[in-house]
Image 1 (cartoon, helix red, strand yellow):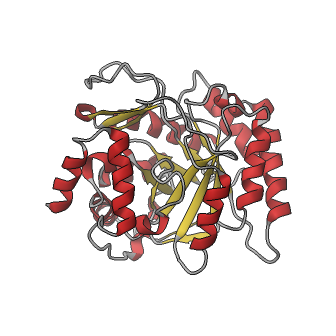
Image 2: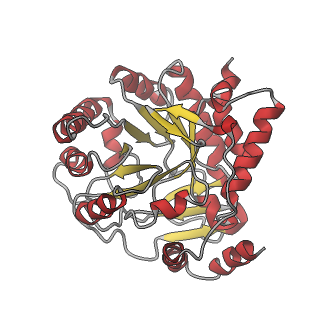
Length: 354
């Protein structure tokens, strides 16, 4: 009850103010969820890593790697920090973050606001001195960069060995022209340079961290299937599906429904899950997929698994439900697996395709 009351009180504040206060409270240890009991049915082996459960915190919440371990203690199976760009940048002018409470959604046009590589690197270096838990880094490019591919490579050069996996984010709608990097002509060069940077920066004897690509949900015709084919040919380690959408404004009720930016939360669920399903089919289930977009309970998490996701991420639902949501989803997900006779998450992945 206390957690729900605090979450409701936060929604009385401006969104960015509430987010900043949440980070402060998390750092202080005052924000905690109920202890999550480990359930062996929820353990996942993927990307060369062993996850205690498939539910992760999406990028955007902890842009500057300030609280990854505190968020892991809420029960998340992994946490993704960032997006981080080589140089610090303030992002777009405020206001740039909008709640649509009736829709259980958020529109943002943050614009990769972050402290930059150097500060995030320092925090990760401190963390690796003894903390456990899987943490990934979401890599971005500066808005005014003249060579965005080089920005991603630099991110890998500086941070390689400090995280468990890396996500190349070419799908934010809030950096003009960024989504052009999803085109086949640029993807090969992008992934090649990031891989070269990884190999050059990897400490001797260290495990090779996987590199994933985060894609948009906004594709026309068979463009998504063609992209999936390109990614299969490039042998990417995994795909994050999906980022926010610039569409889906019809039918929204919140007074901010006309704001420019990416829409996340409940309205995104059908589109993002359909994209997930299509990519799984197009790649034959051979590339690990992280399902993001609209997860708010065990049923939506389970639907993503059945559509083809091996791992899951959420963020927006936390705005409305608070930190207790994590263990509730895990409990519900375990019950749904048991109901359908699945002894593990792996058995449920892609079940709708069989």
